[in-house]
Length: 307
Ligand code: AMP
Image (tube, rainbow, N blue to C red):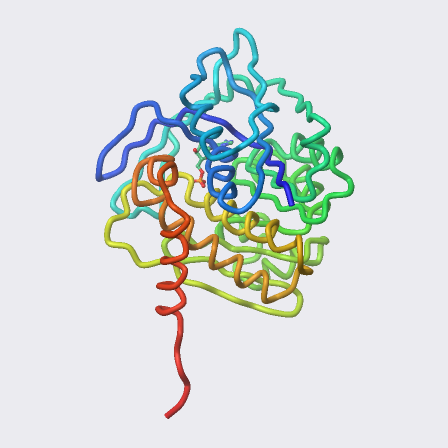
């Protein structure tokens, strides 16, 4: 089932203990779309400026992503983010955010983008998320990501957006901040009581947990020795998770089994993303590598209770 994603399309400047990039392709919608493109047709909605290059659009087109709703704003500048990581790659400092073309952006969705059965509202201003959600009233599965900034300055709007989706994908710290509950399960239960059926708590290098009204499931991150740049890992996880669900919803209902398998796909995709800077690794990822990593993930999480 085709997926529409709305969110940032960006240039990122990133420094980690293992190197730096001054201006690379990034943005939540980009990381999501590249990952989800391994499973389904993806349509990206979002603005870019005059400065956004054809080569960057080609990265998306190269993975079969539909970019006809990427709107070029004349005279505008592409969203820019600068961040730096220390040795603890789980915590980063945002040094600069330039909203550029996102200021005053009103999403215009083509009839194709409005007809998708699956929608991902990547991290952007929650009013924009609600506007896009309203344009796909019949979508079968809608998921949302957000960040501390919007909890700080637009909490009411974010809560309204959350009430309109099936699935919320947030960092554990963001779930705590959003609900004011220190305990992750209590925080997830609180968000479930607002309407969504599925909560995914991302925990960086420690993995991700899935909470629904009936069940709990958790996977560690795939153990890697060469983590170079975690930027976009959360969105890449979401791309694998939502992408797999969109693919499977063609033939099955949303079940606990399907959600667990989707967690594994999100985990596998995210593990590739962090091996190199930005989108570099995912750009040349092969399907066979995903299959092999899923197999390894199955092996490291398997145990027997016999004896
Ligand atoms: P993640 O590491 O998964 O949280 O995502 C990082 C991506 O989010 C980067 O590529 C940034 O361009 C993008 N990003 C950072 N801050 C914001 C923001 N305030 N709004 C939208 N996108 C952002």
